[in-house]
Image (cartoon, rainbow, N blue to C red; front, side):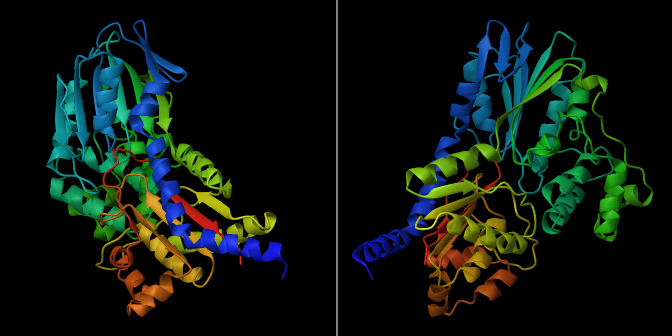
Length: 450
C-alpha cells in the first residue's frame, strides 16, 4: 500500500468518525438559513400603498385585514406587522404556541395539532366573521403555513361535532395516506378549507403568502388551501374512501355524506372569488434542500439533491435511495458524498410507541447500512416528528451494533412505532423544539467510502 493511499484511507476514516456530527451540523445550519422573518424581510416590501411579495402585489387603499394560520403564524404576523409599520385594521392568528408578544388589533387562538381542538374551531369561526361583508376596496392578507389543516377548522355540516373531527383526523393521520389525499378529504368537509375562506371574503382583494409543506405542484394543499381554488372533486373523495375501506371507520355524522353521496363541491379555478386573489410562496422544501446541499459542500462533501418524488412508504424510499447513493459515490471515486432528499415519507401507525416518519425512516435505514461507513439523517423542519418531542434522528454504520450491545432489537422498536425511545437511548435524536416553520422534511445520506 502506498503512502498516499494509506493517508487517503486515514482521512476517510477520520471523517467518518465525526460523520454524525457533520450530518447534524448540516441540518441545523439549514434550519438557521430558512428563518421566516429573514425570508419575509428579504422578499416582501411596502412600496407606497402597495404590498409587493415577489412578483405579486396588492393595493392597500385601506389598512388590510390579516389572517395568519399555521405553525409559522406568530412569526409571520409579527413580521408583516413590522413591514406595514403596524398599519393593519384587524387580524387573527392561530398557531400551536403562544406568541412572545401579542400585536394590537389581533386576536390569538391556540389551535390543536395534529388534531383540531376547540381553539381550532373558534379561530375558524372568527376568521369567517372577519372577512364577511367586505367590498372590492377592502384587502385581506393571508399568512398560511403548515399545520393549518388541524389548527384551523370548522365543519361545513353543523351536525359534525368537535369529537367527530378529532376522530376523523386520527383516522386520516394514522391510515397511511399521503398528505395530499388526506387534504382532499378534509377540504370537502370544511367550511374554511378548499377555497371556502376566500369565497367568504369575495369581492375583496386577497393575497396569500404561504410557506409550503406540501409537494411543490400542489400549493393549494397547504393547510388544505383555505384561500386557493381547489382542483380536487367530491368524486375523488368518494373514490379514496372506497379504495381504502374507510367508510365503516368514519364517525356516523361524516360517514352519512359518503354513503348518501351528499358532499358539497369546493370553489374551483376560474370562479369569481379568485379573480382578484393572488398567492406567493415564501419558502418551500426546495429552499431547505438547496441550503443543505450548499452546507454539505462547504464541509467538503460532493453533494447532490435527489429530485425524485419521495412521498411513499419509508421502507420503499430507503430501499430505492441506497442504489442512488451508491451511484453518486461511484461517480465520484475518492470523495465523500452527500445525497440530499426532501418530501415526506409515509409511516402508518402500527403500534403504541412514540416516534414519527423521520425516526422510523432512520431506524429502518440503520439496519441497511450496518457495518458500512455511511450516515443517515431525517428530520422535520417543524421541530416535531409524529407524537414525539424530537424532530428526527440520525444513525451510522455502528448504530445497530450499539443497540444490540444494549439488548435493543431494532425490528421490535420499528414494529411498535417506538423509534423515538430507540434513538433517545442511543443519544441520536435531533431535538430543535418547535421552529415556527415547516417546509417538510430534510433527509441526508453521507457515504465516506470503503
